[in-house]
Image (tube, rainbow, N blue to C red; front, side, top):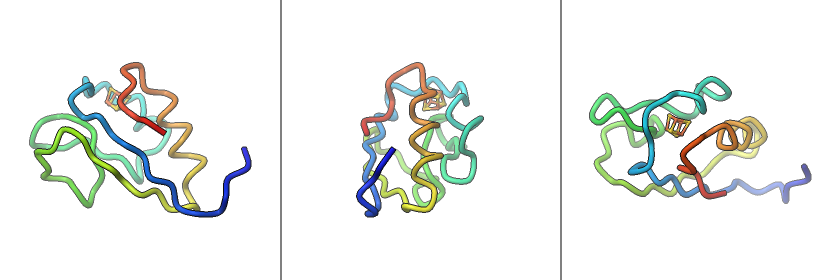
Length: 79
Ligand code: SF4
C-alpha cells in the first residue's frame, strides 16, 4: 500500500476485544493485552479503563500494525 508518510491514528474499540491475541500474533511490539481487563491496548495506556482509544502508529511500523488490525475477528480496530 502507499501511505502518505505521516503517522496514522487508529481507533481501538476495546469493548469489542475478546482477548484472543490474533492481532498480537502479527504485531507484538505495539499491541499488548492489558493485565487489568484482558483487552487490547498499547504500552503507553497499559492501565487504561477507557473502552475507546485513539492510538498514533509510527510510520515505521504502520504496515505491520495494519496487518495486525486486519487479523482481528471482532472489528476492534477502525483504520
Ligand atoms: S485480535 Fe481483536 S479480539 Fe483478538 S486480542 Fe486482538 S483486538 Fe482483541
